[in-house]
Length: 58
Image 1 (cartoon, rainbow, N blue to C red):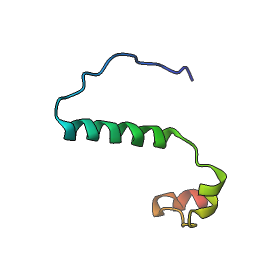
Image 2: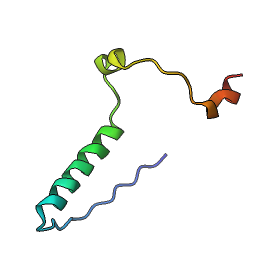
Image 3: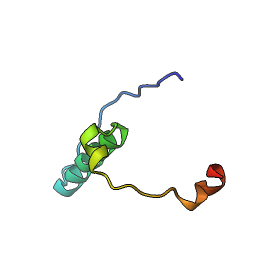
Image 4: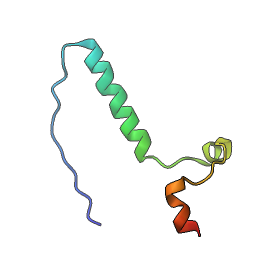
């Protein structure tokens, strides 16, 4: 799959709450794209598969 890079500039708002919100959203987006390391996988509790995936299992 070909990756697409979108570049541009963002004008930061003068409102400090919005700046903080944008920063938090950016950090969240980076974390969702990152794979978990071995320690995080080891510490995460095991969970069952969602009911929607049940037909795929059986």
